Length: 239
Ligand code: CA
Image (cartoon, rainbow, N blue to C red; front, side, top):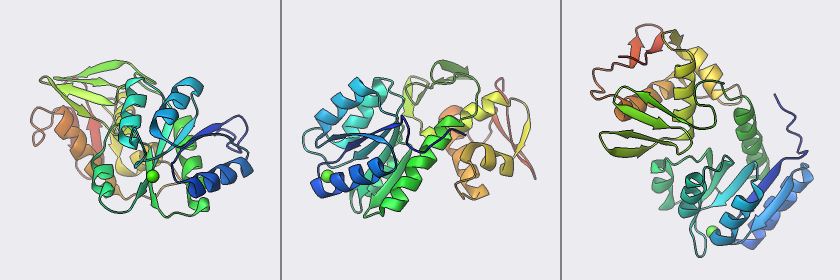
């Protein structure tokens, strides 16, 4: 665990709605964070690349460059900041859910400052405690016919590139660090999702299904992400 009481941690707020932006800045400063702010996507991106904040709060509907484009550009630049999307309820929501280029978490407006601070702490804790393993922080690894690019949050198979969510990457890192071990679902929940969250074991199954579709040539007949009946999963690099 790191000391998450502000000190030295920097948060960049990219939000065009002034009253919300000011409220976010106030709440974060009160918690001891150093806060940077931008009112549009282009300035936000520039500030992010120049200052390298620890966390970015990113609104989606922004003048100029929208939040999705900002996030994509950040990840292409391999910026490792945790990104928390602030989304309005409505049509954006589907896009948020389908968006898999490395957002760490989503908050739907309106949210309370208490909820926001909780989520910021949670993403920071997750990053600090991320399971060490293969390709921490970047690099590529080949899993059968697929090549995973950790820094780019993507996977390539048969010439097709697919995005990977942060959680899918964390899970994959964990599997790689525990190759050939039968991992039960509760352990996966505890080690990959962490104590601050309460997903169900079904969450794990869903993530494994998604990973299989991206990695396995025949997802119904997996060679790498193997089901261990009554336990959970076993990962093998050479299927
Ligand atoms: Ca907005």
